[in-house]
Amino acid sequence: MNLIDIIKNAGIVGAGGAGFPTHVKMNARVDTILVNGAECEPLLCKDKEMMKNYPDEVVGGLLLAVANASAGRGIIALKGKNKAAIEKFNAVIAANKLEDTIKIHILGDYYPSGDEVVMVYDVLGRVVPPGGIPLAVGVIVSNVETFYNIFMAYKTSAPVTDKFLTIAGEVERPVTLKVPVGVKISDILGYAGKVLVDDPVFLSGGAMMSEVVYDPETPVTKTSSGYIVLSKNHRFVQRKTQKPQQFRKVGKSACDQCSYCTEFCPRYLVGHQIEPHRVMRTLLMSSSSEPLVTKWAANCVECGLCGFYSCPEDLLPNFMCATAKRDAAAAGVKFEVKKDFIKAHPMAQYRKVPTKKLIAKIGLSGYSDHADLELIEIRPKSVTIKLRQHIGQPAEPVVAAGDAVKKGQLIAAAPENKLGANIHASIDGKVASVTGDAIIINNINRGN
Ligand code: SF4
Ligand code: SF4
Image 1 (cartoon, protein in one colour):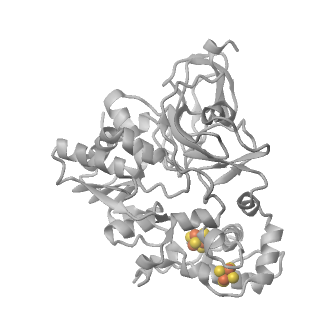
Image 2 (image 1 turned 45 degrees about the horizontal axis):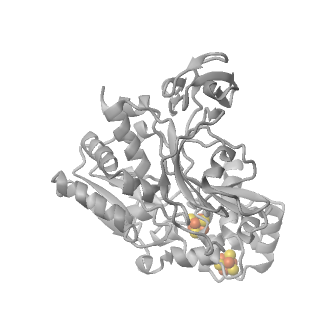
Image 3 (image 1 turned 60 degrees about the vertical axis):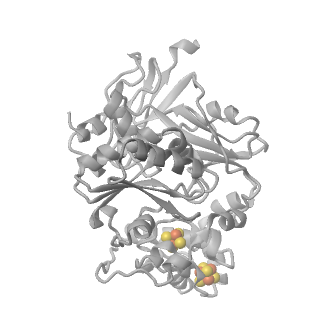
């Protein structure tokens, strides 16, 4: 079986948060494969821990991807502060005489170093065109855990049944775990010790680009990379959950057009057409109820930097950009993107936002950014496995309520000739229910 079929069968999707099906991404010819080990979301440690604990597997997955794409080289990009991981990778490269094929690129500790467009520019000096993907400039970028999953699927035929993630924030003992896909947050929270607040919410996927999850019964998916536990009343949570009426109204009355939001925007700095201060200007000139349609938001990647860090008025231009993108889509407006002559801003390398300063600004300085990997066997009573954990169409169930299933068994298949990914049972058990949204499996060894 070729590598692409192995990846497809194993249901591998981008493990960094995006969830793009990996068999589609890897099915290309490029000159460089880039391992994204930046992990720039504050407090998350799962990539750092994986690189430290599984350097052979990550390099193994990278070599498979390099060979498959006929790429001349693979580059592992990670932050200089991750010294243990760098040492481990160098040892693997030296032991296997891979110096000509695999390189290490050391990144500074800034946000958002893991944005693939920013990373391709920083590592290779190439500008991915607006609206495009790194493939357009001869590069495939994937998360550390994705390469680990490729290696495991190739070596052991293991499909994706588990997820590495960090639990941090208001917990006694931040930790990184390997958990079955579909386990609930409430099932794994205790492994980080006591929750230290009475009214916890969970920032799923980190601080900056996360969704605020209120329900601890929410299941883990193949794209979960961690949960930051905070009080519902933490100022950052309050900002992240501001209602549109409020951020529109405040933005309209308080934006002074200083343009700091644009000057620090990482996508603007690589030369993309994105200027959040102009989005705010459109807001100043529109009524509160009308849709906000402006081309200056079209290339926003919603990294959050302009709102949570750059704006001196504490406005939320990031939310206005997101609103403008959705309003334009709803109105059927498409903007012509000028792709020629894209040049990075001359200050691009000098306007990076240090992670430490960002953490201080968003009020997370008091929390530990260390969370060692602990390999604990987690045996939940049941798992709720979503049929859509990836970009594309939901997987189609191939099991029914009452069926006995084994860990690793295919339970839902990617639809034929459509973008999607296979889904597998993450525990041994009995299928309790199959809905249009998820398959619930009860763990028969836990006496349900
Ligand atoms: S940084 Fe804030 S105040 Fe300045 S232009 Fe942007 S939104 Fe307006
Ligand atoms: S959220 Fe703000 S800083 Fe980030 S890409 Fe969008 S406009 Fe730029």
